[in-house]
Image (cartoon, rainbow over all chains, first blue to last red; front, side, top):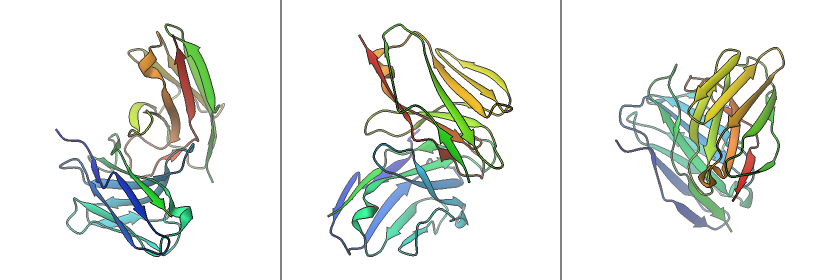
Length: 114
Length: 111
């Protein structure tokens, strides 16, 4: 079956603008995760959804970052008033349920804030 | 807090064996996962150690010692396609707990 997909693959925006990044998890996966990866670093956790609810948003760096998953499938990560420091690859992952299964990652969205 | 330390770079030749070490300092340690990531690609799951000992999956093996807060990934019969970044991570392979990654080891396989 299809893996985790993310759109767009690349996003270039100007400082201060608003961006939305989309994640389509593997069909049937109830758990969805967002991570951020800077160059030369490992992915850094942002937020975890179980179904429609954010079970853990402790990794969101500040209130400019927000994510939703209204129907328990597709998720959107929203960044307001973007800053140059937000430039990174934003990775989405999903897993079948919240206990035992592997996290499958998407290819990421490369965000560049000019 | 949690931190996982790995060497930043490792170089080996095709056909050789290479070991990538990972030491960790974490509270509430779940287990050690390993992910592979090619340039521009998605991290892909390789293995997970919940218990001490060696887990073998084909050419790749992973080891964990909780008493030493240490683990490693062993890659045998290296191939050019194994050139990638390898990340150790604290967290059950798919638990409700988020994964905490090390900074990664860039493996270069030479002909």
